[in-house]
Length: 107
Image (cartoon, rainbow, N blue to C red):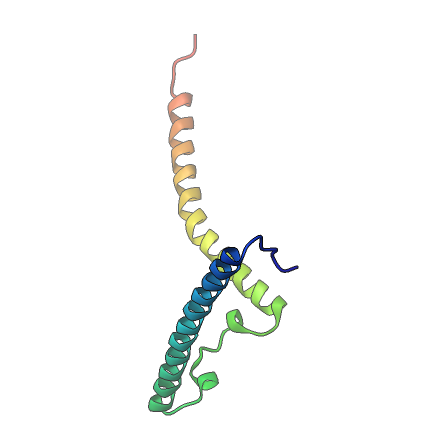
């Protein structure tokens, strides 16, 4: 639903705002087109197809489930890398603590 204007000045100020927004979007579009062209030129300079240059990984697969399980697998491995040293440290600390408690005299 278009906005309702109470005066001609309201309409003119609205149109000015829309025109400024349109100019900003056109500038942004031109910048993005230049970036796209620069990337295409870069790929051509490297002498290959973009699909061939991408790594062979499931993280960029078009299949959602493949991407999801690839991310989960990376997360799982990261958790193992973090948790195994912490579990070893916890085991050492608890062993030392139980040895200290076991060596206390009983009355």
